[in-house]
Length: 124
Image (tube, rainbow, N blue to C red; front, side, top):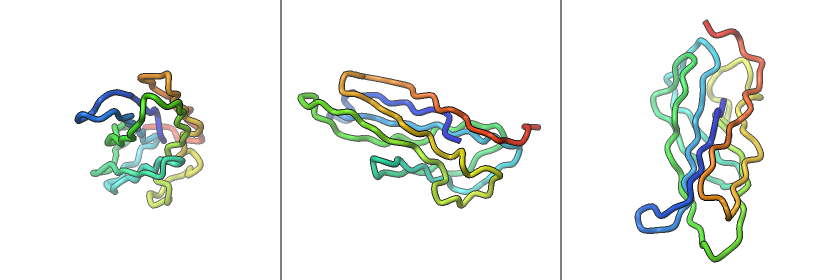
């Protein structure tokens, strides 16, 4: 599942950008060594977590960046989807989305906590 998304607006490498970092969590006792795709629906961007994820482990994804013009009013609206092609076998593919994330032009940083949707088997 996507557990949270951190969003920060500032200067990165000399350019005004918005940095978006997703966190994913394995809610089951199994593990995967597969590469995990994270898709940013509404931004048409993607990134991957290499090396898989273990039982009850939370991993930080890599950052993606969007340029912005501080003189313009904008609001980012997007969703984050982990394993959007359902390549990793699991018992609930319906919990792979974190919907309705918004980041307004007046915000400088935000942590969006995603609702964890079941069912999940008990962690052991």
